[in-house]
Length: 301
Image (tube, rainbow, N blue to C red; front, side, top):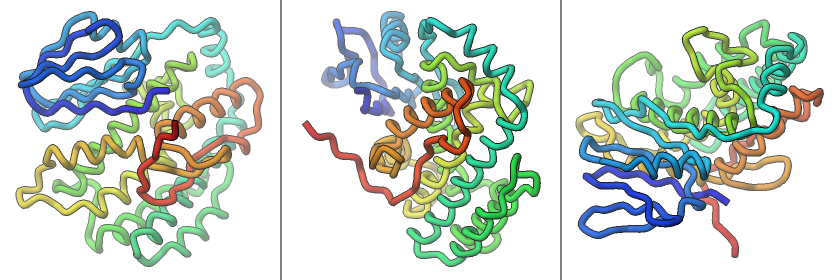
């Protein structure tokens, strides 16, 4: 089972050594490809060989590149063979609008419920108000309860006057964490034969990840809670330790219908249940995470 997130923030050369990723720096480290879920390249002086890219495709690994701001600006997704990819595309395009609207309402309800949980876990007020919003979400979220919840939630969590549009450490950290989640969800969608560009709510023609942007919503509060506990740096710039912490959110435990598991495993199960909706499943049975804190998932052997 894939579980490791590899973050490289110093000059390195990456090559394939049999079944492992070889990371050449002062010393050479070896990580089995079968253990890796995500590789994040966060330095200008990192080189890699074609066999490494090929292995990422072979083992279903998402590889992120960062830009001048050190935020993820590109992702290499595996082009995995799927026996019924054309069938899944037709199902996506033919999804009845009422089903899409019901599914989106289910997603919004869990997102707002997790925002309420985030406020409680962070010791902030306002969770009860968000709980009341959950019951007011209608099919398709026609009253935009998601937007109303966000307008109330972020100032409650980060302080009055906070705006998602402003520059600063908090928003830089939020954007970084969201970007890692988004790419990881896109990886899961591709692995199940789904086209990330075809969403159920998000529908921008310029967005190749509309479906990932639909499914990410209930996972966002995990990033929010993590960022709330992160001490800001003096110059408002994300430090390597901050980025590693945000990538490591993939290994934080959440509650799912099948039990407690890491965010990475929860994404896999959420995508599986999402795919069942396209195949005639009930939108109410969509498996989505419940935020329970920032406890690290422990592997049991």
